[in-house]
Amino acid sequence: MSNNQLKTIVFLGLLSGLLLAAGWLIGGTTGITIGLGIALVTNAGSYWFSDKIVLALYRAKPADEKEYKHIHQMVEELAAKARIPKPRIYIINSPQANAFATGRNPEHAVVACTTGILQLLTKEELRGVLGHELSHITNRDILISSVAAGIAAVISYIAFVARWAAIFGGGRDRENNGLELIVLAIVTPIIATLLQLAISRSREYLADSSGAKLTGHPEHLATALEKISGSVHAHPLAAHASTTATAHLFISNPFRANAFLNLLSTHPPAQERVRRLRAMR
Image 1 (cartoon, rainbow, N blue to C red):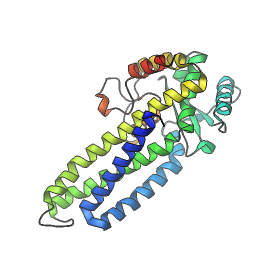
Image 2: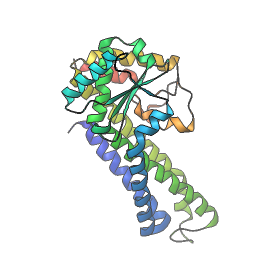
Image 3: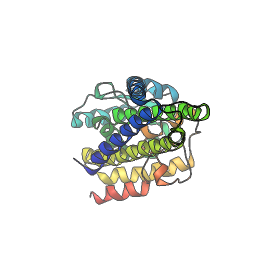
């Protein structure tokens, strides 16, 4: 088990524990049961329909097999090497160089590339990116990210309820739980978000590593990441509520042109990803 896989297990465990604690504070054992129920429904919905939702958000179109023959050939070759069915391939009309994978399992997977990435990267660099995306599929990252996002969303909802309970009274013990509700309302959503982002970053490192092993050329993915980072800064997508939740899907966060604190990022710093890839040589 790799260090990043271990981190994912630990972070998911902490996130789940936070959900149970939040449910208990707001409603005791009944709160825990309700929290788990909401989490299960939320996770199932996001997991089952994630591909349809994200493809619709970005107006992705199926990649014509004649026009994009070279992409179909690369994906088919890499999928065979990874021992998974060939994913469906979609194209997003955007000048920003980026790509993502989605779908509930390898049998229903999708890989999407922007027109910008097809114009910017060499054939070898694009192959490195596709190897990274197929690794997200083989590593079951769509499932893991859906679970993490679903739990974090439920915690945020519980915190919203706690804010009202703190104002009007409520919870397990009306006389003694005012401070607990305030902490629940303010602190737990922040912790949940930080854990979700940490999971996302660990999965990106793992996909970089396993993708480089799949293609056999870490340098190709390293140079691709350098080019993609520059393109994101030059052509950031307009962020709004319906799309920012999908940032973790992309190979590079598409919504910001400025550097943020690493702790608050869905992706590791591009420089560190490139350094680790070049160390693999």
